[in-house]
Image (tube, rainbow, N blue to C red):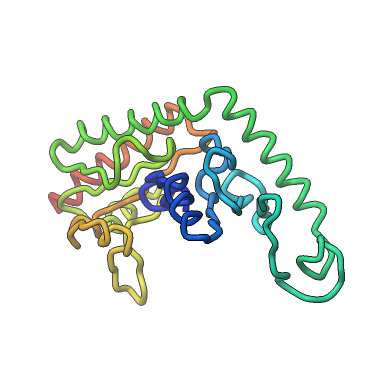
Length: 234
C-alpha cells in the first residue's frame, strides 16, 4: 500500500518496486489512500499495476480503476464475453465510471491549488492545540513527516479511544481498536509498530478532508479536550 490507512505513513514504493523487479516479479501498488491526497506518478514509482479506489477521493462507492503498465498481461477475472478488453465479462457501469473520472478531475484541481498544504497545516494545528489542551498526554502514532496530509493518529494517556469518542458525539472518527462482541483489541498495525496495548487502545484516527475548516478544528479541539479532562477525572 502506498500509504498506511491507520497512520498515514507513506511507504517507499519506488524502492520496493526496484527490489521486486530485480527478482523478476511484477509490482502492484494499492494507492487507495493516496490518490487525490498527494500527487501520484506511476512512472516515478516504477510500479507495474496501481489501484485507485473512487470513494477515497469523493466518488461513489463501487467505482475503482486499475492502472496497467504497457506490456503487462493479466488473467481475466471472469471468463465470458470479450468486452472489457477481455479481462472480464459483463457491462461496465457508465454512471460510476463518469463519477470516478469527475472525482479524479476535481482531485487534480485540488492538488494544483495547494490543497494538501492547507490540509496538513490544519492537521498540525489540530495536533498542536490538542497537545496544549492535554499537556503531556497526547502521543503521535506514526511518522511526523512522511505521511498523508490529512491523517492524525494519536493516543491520549489515561483514556481509551472508544471512551473519548463516545463522549464526543460531535466527532466522527474511528478508534485504533477493533471491537468484536464488546471486546476491544488494538489494531495489528499499531501493535506491529511496537506500541504497547494501553497506548494502542487509546488511539483515535482523526482524518481531515477538503471541506475541513478552521472552525471544524476549533470544534474538535474543544470537544476532545473537554472529554479528555472529564474522562480522566471520572
